[in-house]
Amino acid sequence: MTLEDALAALRARIQEGRAEGMAKYHKYPREYLGIANPDLNDLTKEWRNALDVETRVRLASELWHTDIFEARLAASKLLTQARIRPDEGVWELIKGWTPDFDSWAIADHACMAGQKRLTADPSRLDDVEAWTKSDHMWTRRAALVITLPWTKQNNPKPEDLEARDRILGWAASYVSDQTWFIQKSVSWWLRDLSKHDAPRVIAFLEKHGDQMKPFARKDAARKLPR
Image (tube, rainbow, N blue to C red; front, side, top):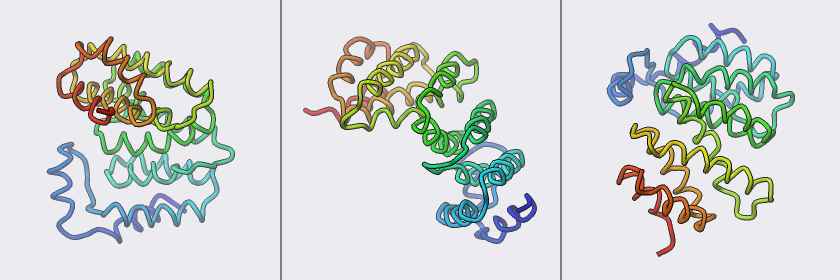
């Protein structure tokens, strides 16, 4: 499949009048085609089933570089799959996208693909830790969004608890950053963790909550048992 084929398939699913609303909602100056997310899901599922890994990586890279909103989402969805073998090229591509993150929707879709590659090989947390020192806000935020699977285990193994504490350390280093999206990423991680490991969230908030913005502190505690 060529890039031209993929773009033609995307454009065939445009809904008239939808692009204007999307541009107004996302507020970032790029091309929006006006495609509903279920249509993107159906199309990229077809591509995942039809294309080998090497072709998917090549096509995802080409779609990403168009900077079209739906093309970037499609690039991410092409690579969002639990089992991919080999997956080294997939992980390298996703890592390479982080400097381009400029909106939550695109970043979150790419991070969903990255979550699968991290859980497949947790040693890649070493790569993600470097993002926490980045000057690029979206890259720093991505370090917490991409590691959300470590908030969800009900019966974590010792190595998962070690990773959980490691990521909480990253979150602790973020609390003095008053940027809304950084504060929200901390509260999101804590809120999801609170449903599975309330004691760690309570301890975090007792130690660092005073440095968090009020909205973030409230959001982080929202799912804690009363």
